[in-house]
Length: 386
Ligand SMILES: Cc1ncc(COP(=O)(O)O)c(C=O)c1O
Image (cartoon, rainbow, N blue to C red; front, side):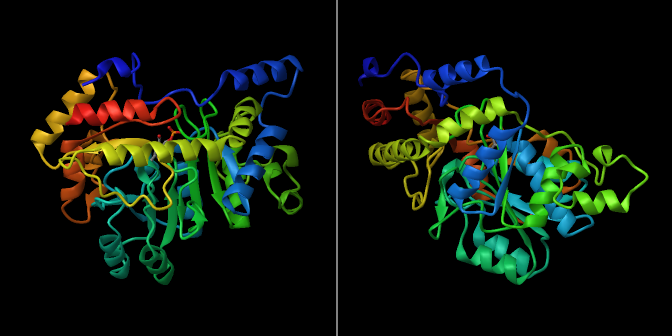
């Protein structure tokens, strides 16, 4: 075992924001710029949309806000109490917007090769008319879409949303994830492929969805809308500058954050290549007592999963990581069915037992990937795992 080759700490995440980014930010601040949401946010939205191939994107202040906004958009398209399907293994804020909005959540087991929603089970539920909105999650940057999921959702009028908060750069059938359904959401939090300190994006091909998202993001104000002239004409008794069309929030980000995002967009392809090379190397050094059969086609690796076949393997892997001083954590939030906010809710149910999600919860953890992880570190990990 060669612990000496592991740097002091193999962190879960490292700065995606470089010293050069910070210097550029300081220069820009020195030019006395507009700091709130302005031209740079609009630039980042335009470049993000071009990159992933959608009509438009709306920058918000986090991936969680993006998920909330996407679900509000789904609710406008399909009013009433919705049954929102989602995978059991994901981050809490994939489903908490549904609970906050008064909807129901149906959790599905996950597929062991993608760690995404079990496609056959979700399709069967859509066929039976049990789901109104399907929130697919591309966990750890592994594509979770299948041709069946997309076709079945379309056939049964199920609104497809994609949580791509861990999946900037992931592709399905040649297209960027986040473009297959009504909306795709992204997180620009620390350690993600693009980091703007805090930040997120909602992307969509639907002009009315985009318009609604801009209103929601900024207090519900008419002046955010393409239909401003009509709204103003329809409501002559209200000052059009302060005309509130829909219940809104303030989900805005700032030009300060967008400047960091724009600089990282220039490096994103390199970032993805590096993370994917690390994932490939990682899977080569893993011993057979850990899962290695992930569907990596189209992936944009976020972090590195260690999921053991059994409790002994999990103990062995955890102690190897510990010996090497590698930071580890549960696979995202583990099986959400174990989380108190789910257990205490009468609006969340499991579609069926979730044996794979339970297994991931019990026997899995993840470690960091990113530019701070080198081939040498991965080799040392492989040796320690035995
Ligand atoms: C799958 C998933 N969805 C949503 C989020 C929320 O993003 P944020 O932390 O920017 O709110 C995260 C956070 O990492 C996530 O992993």
